[in-house]
Amino acid sequence: MAWSPVERRTDRVRIRAHTCECLPLVFEQCRAGGLGFVRRHDRSVSPWIVVDSPWMKAGDAETLWQRIMRGEAR
Image 1 (spheres, rainbow, N blue to C red):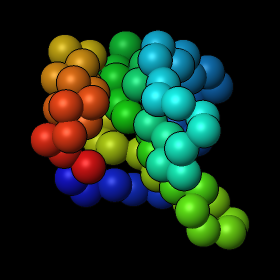
Image 2: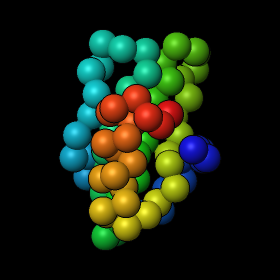
Image 3: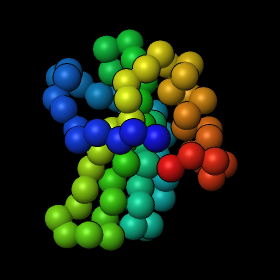
């Protein structure tokens, strides 16, 4: 998976799901501008590192989210 630094591409991002905030690595399933992506927050380092997956069709982003949740992608 090629993660990229967060770029402000739109005014609003809707978070559809997220993993537990109690963990050092938090994932968010996001939608914006008709596209989907996953945002990863690495809180094991200071300052936190926040990166996005590539923006893609919503269905492809859903598949990526499911793969991350099953431990098949990082």
